[in-house]
Image (cartoon, rainbow, N blue to C red; front, side, top):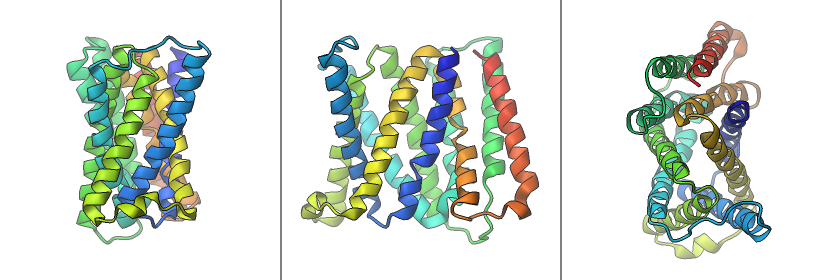
Length: 293
């Protein structure tokens, strides 16, 4: 149980940090997503080869119909990630953070409603923890730039809905006993879906194979996403998915810290009361979620 919590916290850090390369990149959002997927796919093949080749883990059925759902998850994730990248371009990390964090309630409520993992009084603690985490995320979202970009907000909300849905699908597949094989199908679906969308968008398939210095930024993101996905799956096998996913929403804390101290998007001196309140609500959320275990 403790290890599941630790994994969820690490995932929250990775989910915040893996957005940083996008902040530094000017690459087309969909092409960037495709290269994230390629990095993710190469890493998945390597991990599965080691795990199954050396007998570290049990062989999984690669021809199960459940993998169709994993492939669907990949396509939805591409839509979410492309929206994620566009939103960051339009409204920055801190502006994007507020709207993206609707993913927490969406994913948690789906798991609670359809997977029946937590019932009775524990469900109340989960809902309280989810609410505290969401309030924390809102408090941590501070913009010194008063301009409103409706397009950026809509893309951030689309990313939130997509990521909440993919977390739900991830938990369903994990419940079926698929750990490493879902990495393969998910990453492959990401690459194919992003490539198709990019070709339709630009009508320039040759650019897909163009490798440059700009490629390394999404490759870094893909490696971090692979690590986050593996740890997220392990966490789902150890603690309830709703609790794990809610703890993962701590990424709002790390995102705002990156926005403040790395990219200087927010003034700490100006907004310190709100930032401290955000930390208080985040700690309260963790406490409530522990009662839900």
